[in-house]
Length: 217
Image (cartoon, rainbow, N blue to C red):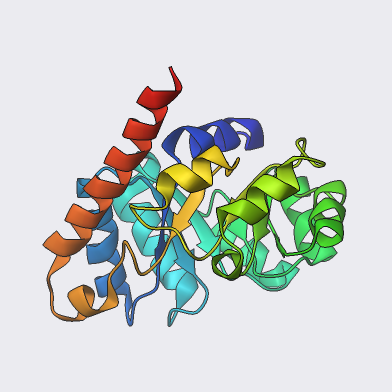
């Protein structure tokens, strides 16, 4: 898939599962649970043990049935390793020009983190495909709406603060993609082996997106 095709798919699927797990087996089970609930964007974070091994395992098991990405990526070397392991997009909590440049060269969407209008615009001008507003939970959808007024051309997504209840507010405020961590991949449920809880969370999030879209027509 080309960079533009991946971006279209991201915007179409909307909900991205941010998977943080103690090991690769739990991560695979969590991905399966998300997939069963209809969430097909998967972000494996570099905060998990052996992230490259986990990315490869997800890619081997699910292939193109999920849109696999890597999160919390710092440094061009880690970005390259993630792409080589099957990541189709790269997410970072900060803006590093070396990461943006590498992803642009590899034709892979990159979503660096930024917070202020200047940082967000600078990240986009540097080659970001979508700017990850972080930490979005401290500011909420109203901040997105305020950003979009003077910067409508800059695609943005929140990290933090996304739940079933807030999905319509983020989308109405202009968010392109909605990464969801604990409100989807519930750590306690994962540790208890209750992957049905994660599947149910996924279903509810996708239903909230569908409900919002119906209201737009």
